[in-house]
Amino acid sequence: MDTRWTGAAILVIGPIELDCDRYTVQVEGRPVELTRMEFDLLEYLARHSNRVVSHAELLAEVAGRIAGESGSLIRVHVAHLRRKLGFASTLIQTVRGRGFLLRASSGSASEATSAHGQPSS
Image 1 (tube, rainbow, N blue to C red):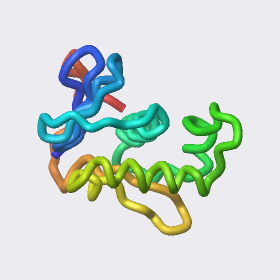
Image 2 (cartoon, helix red, strand yellow):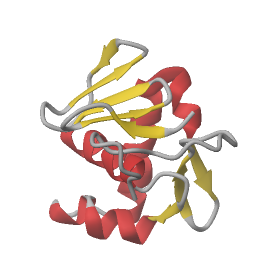
Image 3 (tube, one colour):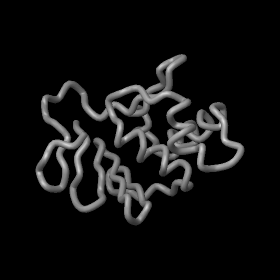
């Protein structure tokens, strides 16, 4: 499993497909309704997959745009996101005391690629 771009703004992480232009998510082809915050969290984790993203980073980069958001609310939003993703939620791992990790690969040697066939970062 890897993270890859399939088109102009579609990101695929295993069974999860994010359309970043339309703000839509599908799991195995089935639409999943997310709030804007949940979508933004998932997109940020996907763009930074396979590394731990701290609560502080998520707060600063995603939730900080919304007045009143805190680290504990980040955990609540991630819990809601996991519930909505169903079985695909196992890709989001909690790293106790550090943050969250979106595991986009399971030991695969393949790299994520952009729509132009270049490795993505």
